[in-house]
Image (cartoon, rainbow, N blue to C red; front, side, top):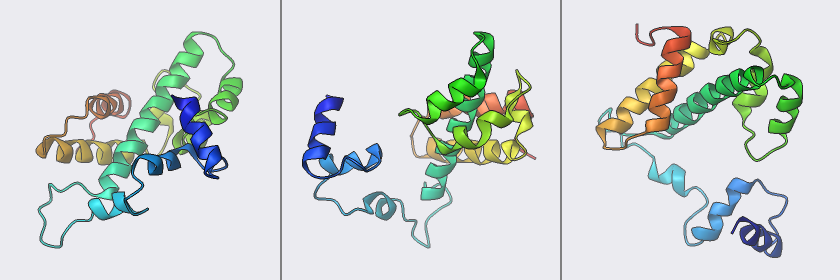
Length: 158
């Protein structure tokens, strides 16, 4: 399936684009900013509305928690951390948080403690997960990531 999607992107002239652009294959009748338009919050909306910032907070928070976990795994199995960094940064699993923070995480097993912004990222993730729950969106992976933050950097609420 993935190969067929890739071949379709080559055919229509998109091979050099990020793989996330392939969503357009499935949503051709939607404008390019469809997600942005769908997550706009009306001025009179309640605080439980999910915003684009909440989605970003979820993605950043989960990716950073996964980065800490991957560092722990790399150390546990005795792999070369720098080599794994190069592999992940060149693969489909690459993300900005991994590239920016993985090499800073040197003292396990509580790697998130080494990132100054971790508590803030965790708090924003927790807030976004709570907001998602109020509209019935269960986020088990993001909820587990909140627990990872709490274990590694302490309580997230003040």
